[in-house]
Image (cartoon, rainbow, N blue to C red; front, side):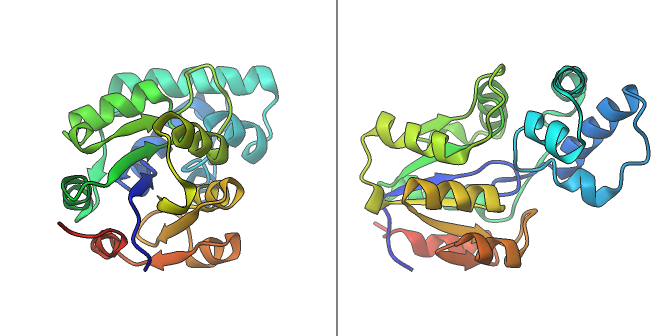
Length: 217
């Protein structure tokens, strides 16, 4: 793999396994709205895009009902489930070593910035980040391209020195649209097929494989 100075990285499904937390909050919100027995494969689609997109596009809710669902989700998430995550093997070491090697490690997530910051602080990973970006709480957008472009501008990065690391097609499409390289990881919630079809520059099986992306000091 090519070596990069700027490593942009997704949160859910790439740094942390947050599947149980996300899905349990979605189930809670839907059941409060009278929607029960949602198939697991449908619930999995909530991991990656914004809640607004998932409740409207995946579940077909109208704007008012989707906003109510988001409110219910967040009440459960913030009070009970936000920190119910597991770090993937090798990811903390990758972030630590890449930062120590002089790379800029940048968090680019569709999770609201306020939540993402708290999670990274709790996991003691913020110390390895040069910058982090995510939507505001009232921003329904989940366009990773917009977030990538924001990070590029804020950190004055050269796109040819950037790579986006993520587990779903949303991460890869964001990178393609922004004009930077990308790495799809197979240990998260996306599939190899979707990562390849969306145009991932590289695909890796485990977090340890990401160490090939930068030069060690």
